[in-house]
Amino acid sequence: MKQKKISCALLSLLIVLTVLVVAVIIYIPVLAEKTYGQASPVLSVVDHYTYSISLLWSAEDLTNPVQTVGEEQIFVIETGDSVVQISNRLESMGLIRNSNIFRIYLVWKGLDTTVQAGSYKLKSSMNGIEIASALQDATPSEVIFNILAGWRLEEIAASLPTSGLKVTPEEFIEAVRNPNHPLDYFPEGASAEGFLFPGSYSLARDMTADQLVSTLLQNFSVNMSSDLQGNISRQGLDIYNTVILASIIEREAIVPDEQPMIASVFFNRLNNGMKLDSDPTVQYAIGYDNLNGTWWKNPLTLDDLTIDSPFNTYKYSDLPPAPISNPNLSAIQAVAFPAETPYFYFRARCDGSGLHAFAETFEQHLQNACK
Image (cartoon, rainbow, N blue to C red; front, top):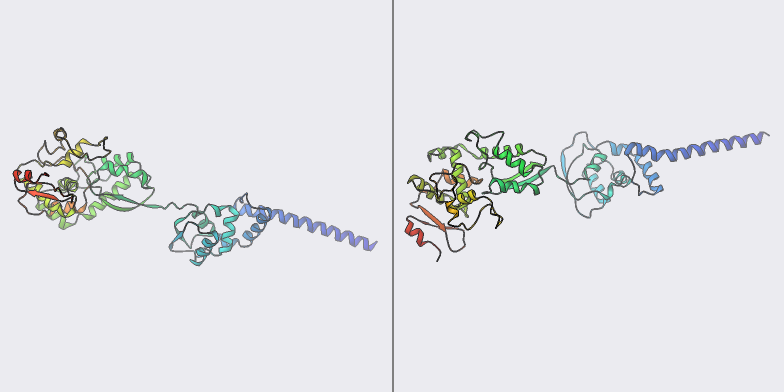
């Protein structure tokens, strides 16, 4: 009888232990999902269970960063890199605590198939879960935005949709035409056209149109040295009119070295009461040329030269009322430091070099025409 009681007790204990084991087996994946979120549905039952144990056992390696304060590092994932390679490299760079548990977490969550190739900015103060999430989006927080010298407002706006910036062309055009932070030398109500300083910019992807315009205007101001402004004054011009003239020179000159020469021609004409007779001013007045898909119609017809616009320097004397493009620093410097020449005319040479033939008289100018 006593032996029978012992057997029943052992059986009961075995049943209890079995129930506890089953409960633990069932509860481990549940606890893992409570801690790390839902597991990938493609995992097998065995993987689901074994990965759950590993994640719970090594939780600190995922939830704690390597350092409390860490400097930013660039981490590059190449196309074709395996999860093992990525994990090992992250650990060797001191960005994660345990490459094996990091890899298990990626597979357990199904993130191993969605890691994107690209360049990432990571810190050792990020924990493994945060780094795993960051590797799902290779979109940089900053983009490189290029503005070419001689572009007009609409050309800059047209480049925005493929730039990576969130600013729309319409938002940009509105911000340029009505700048929130105009420069001191802007006439009242003036557009920022002409002061959108050309160059290559590293910009926050989510910046606003007003912030973009302010950045371009600030760069313009930075380049206006006291020496440059002093020489602009000696030419009898203010900065706004300097930019107007520079915007024309920028469109006229193919070779930057010729800009001071072209500036001298325009100064000679202005000082002698002559019209500038500049094709780019007419192109600006015409606007978009649908036939050729450009903002700068070329060649111009004789009828084009008669367009009634204050920007048409074949029809109206003196400078146009506003810049026609956004000139580079070299064109502004050409206005501040023009060459001293006797020339009143120039036209493109016939050799395709992009250089110009200069002339003192109209007769010489005609002789320079291509035969």
